[in-house]
Length: 227
Image 1 (cartoon, rainbow, N blue to C red):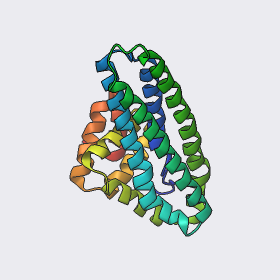
Image 2 (image 1 turned 30 degrees about the vertical axis):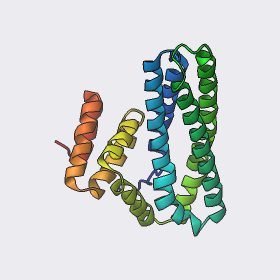
Image 3 (image 1 turned 60 degrees about the vertical axis):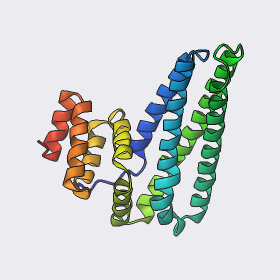
Image 4 (image 1 turned 90 degrees about the vertical axis):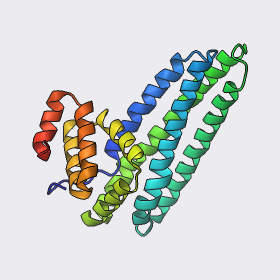
């Protein structure tokens, strides 16, 4: 990682989640809930979001970030765990609601009303989730910087990178690429280059090139020494 830079555990991936959730909110608002194909597409997107959030929060954070906090800020870990449990509960309710709609006849007259209730509930979920990730960025991240060594944080972040499947890694990278600025991407990819096997970094680098515009990719390529 470049000297003098502090590792951002939360910010870049959270920017990606904000972007993805706002897009899903728009999709939920525009969906024709009486149309089965549209409803199946919405349900598939919701399943993907739920799986991704559960991986990020209940998986990676609990395994690799919370142990660092527990020896230093045990009350903070307890609070985060409770929030993660509530996030999980809200996601379960949203999935059950849409799944119930899927099983009704396509012409069921109450589908539009039930769809509106889902849209409202999904946006209430976003409101809670935004407060939660803001607390992680504004309170937990500074505490990690103050109470952990740079080596501890880099080890935790490397473990997160190395414990994702290729599909999970590409999904997370896609969210980050859609939302982070060039400086954030440069710092993240520089750390990934130093931490990951060359073949895995090359796959991510090529994916970044396919997603970014020519100017942004050229800037990143120069910083990373990529071909």
